[in-house]
Image (cartoon, rainbow, N blue to C red; front, side):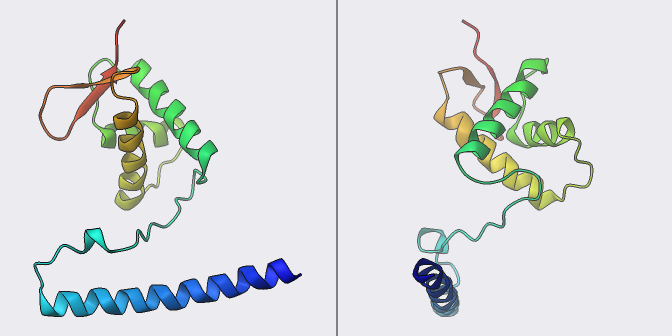
Length: 134
C-alpha cells in the first residue's frame, strides 16, 4: 500500500514537472525562436497501439524488421520497413505518426546493428538498408 502511494505521488510530481518544463520551453521559444529545444526537451512519445514498449518490444520489432528485410528484393528505408512490419502484423489503419514512431525504433536498431547483420547501402538520404551478405 505504501509503494502504491509512492507511485501515485511520483506520477503527480511527473505531471507537475512536465507542465513546468513546457513553460520553460515556451519562454525560451519566445525569447529566441531559432533556439533548438531538442537538447533540453523530454521525449513525449505516446506508445503505439500494436507493439508494447520495453526490451521485448525492441527484440520483437528487430525480428519483424529482419523478416521484412529477408523477403525484400532491394534495399529499404526505415519507413518502408515500418510499413512492411505493420502489414505483416495485419495493421491497415496506421497513421503517419504511428508509422514514423515505429520507423524511428527500427532506425535506431539498424544503426546499432550496422555491420553485424545489416548494412547501409549508399550514402543518400533516407538511408537504405539490407541484410549483410557473408
